Length: 205
Image (cartoon, rainbow, N blue to C red; front, side, top):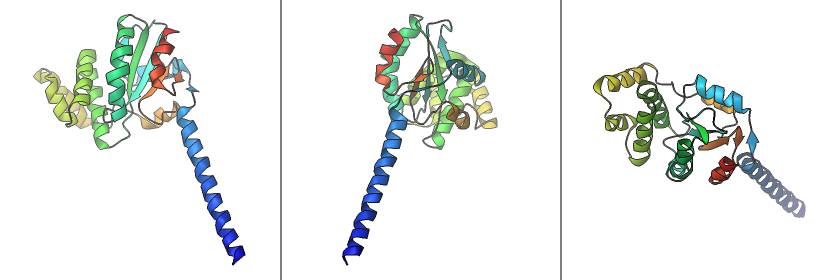
């Protein structure tokens, strides 16, 4: 009886130890700074025709992987994007790029593809407005496109491109190369920030 009890206790301790190790691995993966080649990252941005803003000759490059269905991305947009990134773009302190990383659900992928073609067809201002509407309205990606009020030809062009290429605008496999495990993933000069609230500190360096 005592031997059986000891075996049960040992088994429980092993399970607890395994869970602790697993949690530490997950925690460290998300909270340890990682670095990738910033030129490779920016080349990926250009190759994928992801939305870019600011002066490419700026001192810093900021690349953010986002999902328009992600609540944390919405918080990032409301605080860090509006208060730190937009002023830095305006003052030519950073070159900024946004890469779609739709991992939450199928609607995330629809947002990624439609926003990609909004940027291709109507460029920066239209993409910015689409992003703002996507974060502020609890609706579908196509309804957000309607709210964008593009002229008829551009609206139809975006829809046609979306219907013909519903998996365009993102590459989750390629994103793994840059160690993207969550959104928003914020890179400054190739460094993945473990705490994006510190973004302003890195930009000021």
